[in-house]
Image (cartoon, rainbow, N blue to C red; front, top):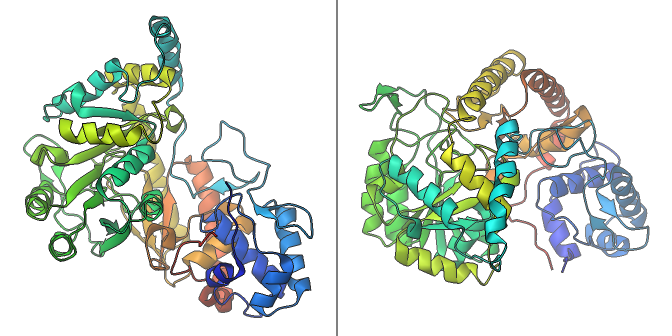
Length: 498
């Protein structure tokens, strides 16, 4: 059932929102809009009544009424005056062929790092899947493990990568997020600790919090210019500096987390890739602490610089791997998987059946086809991403020279250090300039990363130019209004929903 936000929790989320830089109702509406866009106030949640919030904030009811009216006009609040409005997003959306998820019309979406489908290849896979479907229709359609052809195709890809794998070591899931939730419920649970890189993938941080687990963040070192060395198998070996392995080992030894969630392959949001030297040491040290390494390889195939590394599972059979076709082919497939030893897979299956009884059949048939011809669309996709990346880096250097951008080795995003701690404020004002952003603190815990912004290069160069010019203008507004920058800080806790 949808929840509601009590006035005290709302007060904590808002922080010091009223600076006097603009009418109070406008400042209140701006901050609430940010919290909704940024996911810290979930969708379809009832906000406090006008009277209750006015009393808690110490302002007139007229101020709250005007703020709520503005939010309703913008489409971020549903429900008539006098009722407890529920949060939402504007109903006007970009065409379904456009990038990203549903956003207001005319807004370029830089909050989501996702790509359109690989066109004809995905279409053909679904058409072929319908040919295969009749053979399965006499069955019940429930399969908590995954269709055998898909599991075999996934296993064969790992074997080809040098990690001998059988279909019995694969559990098919409805995407990588579904896989992570299954793993969290099985390995961690309430009040247990989960080690994460800091920054990390926001939806993973949300899943860890929702599971009742406690996050143990280990900061990643500051960006350094990578020095690539030739690798024996072709390509280049990444420099050993992108992760604080000493810090991770210390956290595992002293805090004893049940599991560690890691993105070593074109890390989201930084785009870094962990060297084989670091991988080998991390696996060796984790073995002595009881911490299970859970590796998200969703972005591994988006290798833009021909970097050569071995999958983390190549160093230990105890590693649990999450994979997906969402980034390489299309998020609409909703097909992911878990690779682990057979005993762990059995445990994951038991957990999975408490959540659902299996994934959609046609999507799995299509995914099996795509995995058997995995490389077909990949070269064109990588070439497109390389062009986009170079366009974005050039535009940022030209129009926002004070932003220090870490060059990503692969993946979909660039991690930018801002000259001031203005990420949240920039996210608030950016829609006025036609851009939707995810604030830096969404990638961390405790309100960290106000100095940072993740910028995807999933849009075409022309759209990226429009977006960067909009960011420049939004940054200029922030620079001209220091009160806004110092007021709109991210909360130290996620939204508290009663």
